Length: 198
Image 1 (tube, helix red, strand yellow):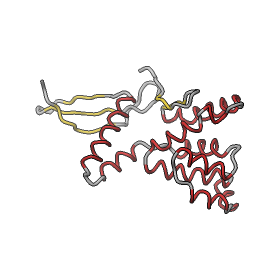
Image 2 (tube, one colour):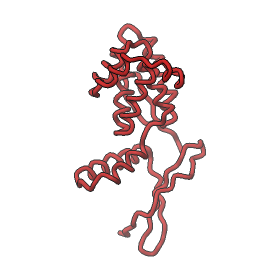
Image 3 (cartoon, one colour):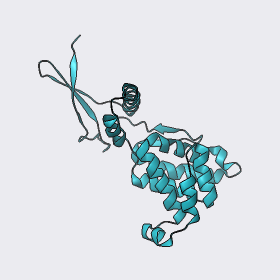
């Protein structure tokens, strides 16, 4: 068995359908190069395991923070998710939504009860959408998987009993945004990778 050593990660290439390709490059002791292009699920599996090991090792967390930054949702996707959350919900219901998923919403409640029309106008959103996005950005910076939990709750069909059409609209809107992250949400509220050939 030949032992190879990690050299670098290259993410400048693309697949034929223009998706970004991540190549992990290894070298052996003779300087020969080996390239591995993992599937999306394999990347997520490596990420999860490396995060678990890093936390167990208590190695200061600097590398872990860099790793987390590499997997975060874009602001544009958070915009769409914030609009889905704010649509049809009162200020209290928005805060309740985040609390139901398990996140503290005390600061949100305060901000939602103190509307700032100038800030909302500058951002081009209602105050409710703006504050929902602020919370999503906070969660995204801590761990992108928190945002996955929010997406799952937003698409949960139990949130739309008797409102099947609205549930379908929410799923479609979320999927339009999530496609840019190579993710999709199912009718039953699960977030899964988009499987593509090639």
